[in-house]
Image 1: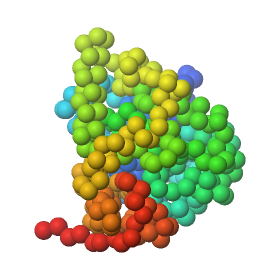
Image 2: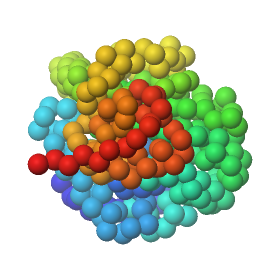
Image 3: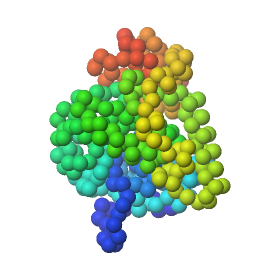
Amino acid sequence: MNGGCSSDVRTDTGVPDERIKIAVIGCGLLGTRIAGELCLCGCAVSLYDSDNTALSTAVSRIHQDWEHLRTQGLLLNQHPQANNLICASSLEAAVEGAQFVLEAVVEDLQVKSDLMRRISSTCSQTAVLGTNTLTLDITAISEHVLHKQRLIGIRFLYPVYTIPEVEVTMGGNTDAQVLQRVGRLIEHLGKVLFVRTGDPLILTPQQVQSRQIAWKEKVQAQQRDRGPGSHGGLNASSHAVVSMLQHVHSATNYRTETEDNRHTDSSPRGNECIICTERERNCLLSPCNHLCCCMECAKSLTNRHQNCPMCRTPIAEVLRVFSA
């Protein structure tokens, strides 16, 4: 499989391109997997990061992810189209013509706000702007955005590929039609819309594992029924393609198991911070004793006087944890 990435210049074939065009900004672990998932679902993805090394690494990581999914029996489309992915040479090139722009940069209000302001002044006025955040206020991020009614929180849950839920958060300025457009996109991806109205959706390791098992069963069933097909998208089975209005969940549906594990590690992934998904979890939030984030993100939470992202308990102290 070619590990390269197409340039941001295409040859016009004369055939209308009906793929959904999505720009993904930020090539960390989460942004990379979002881009990989969108490619598998048949979207035309333009990927950009200001760090050229991160951009190059992201492309290799996407192909490695696809190969891992294949070996684990989790890849429905055995021949993903690498030409669905374009590496953009600039932010302006990445967002040009995009119907959706999704950012997955560092969890910092100033960084996200500045980025969204810049994107909004460059992209189409009709493009939906999605910000991926666990703790930040959507309305605050949209403060300097042009046509701020189109900005909405769109949070894919790590590790993305096998997690059906996509958390969506409306800001104070978000238009209801934007929610409908995002709902149709999520349906196209074969995922489930989770509208956040309170606490964020955080899955326990057991819940993550159960979803991976369910996804593998879905892949096996579709391979038996239809043979080689596409991953997700409009060809997904009826139990995976869901109506937006049928899946507007309350966050409390997912909180029970998390609350029961209040004093244990409830991170949905290995040892990565649940906020940035990049750095190692290395601090304890007191008094709830959740070990769920890195020191940098914990400091950001306390500076903004925010609560524990796992249980919403006010943070009195952050304790650094060292592993042997």
